[in-house]
Each structure stands twice: as C-alpha cells, then as structure tokens.
Length: 136
Image (cartoon, rainbow, N blue to C red):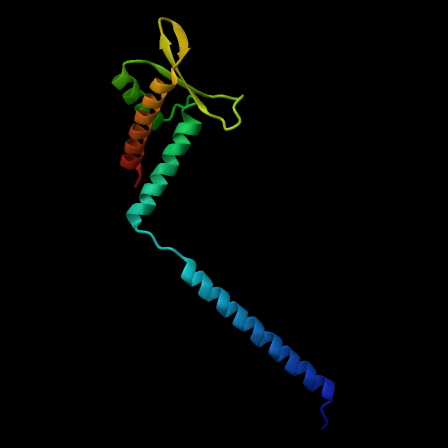
C-alpha cells in the first residue's frame, strides 16, 4: 500500500492547524479566568438594590404607578416634607431629566433647583431603604 505524499502533507497541515487553534483557545481561556472579578454577595446585593431603585425613580414615579412600593415611597416622602409631589420626565431635555413639581394652593409649581436636589436626595435614600427591605 502506498500513501500519496499530498495526503501526508494534508494530514500534517490539518494537525498543525488544530494544535494552533488549541493553543489560541487555551490563551483565551487563561485571559478570561484572569480578567474575572469576583465581588462579595453584599456588593452584588447593593448593586442590584441601586439598579432597582434607579428604575423605580426614573420609570415608575413619572408614570404614576400604582405599585405598593411606589405608593409607600411617595407617602413617606410627602409625610416627611408635608407637601404633595409629582414627577415627570422633561421631554425637551436630551438626557430626560426628572422634573419635580409640588402642589401649593391648588396649583402645580416647579421646585427651585436647590429644593429639588434636597427632595431628590431624600427620595433616593427612601427608595434605597424600601427596595433593600423588600428584596429577598
């Protein structure tokens, strides 16, 4: 039986190709193992709580959601400041900023920036606490 030289060459070429692919995969796997960062469960939880709180503030508050958590957050905020607030997203702003309004004497007024910042800071704290308490 004779083996044609081009078949031997083809087998060697295929073997060389497969070993190069194996070395590349091994390098990639090594890099991926080195680049992974492990964080503590507490840090993961804190990150998730912040993400959910952001979603609540940016999406549920302006939409006047009837979700019980949103109601609790608003009740606590309004009780603390003894004012009734409404939230809406400013469509004209490019970054969709949250606009905070307050009811005063049967009219709706936009809060001054300093006061709005104070209310929004407290809203963030209340929301973080509520989400943290309700997450499993």
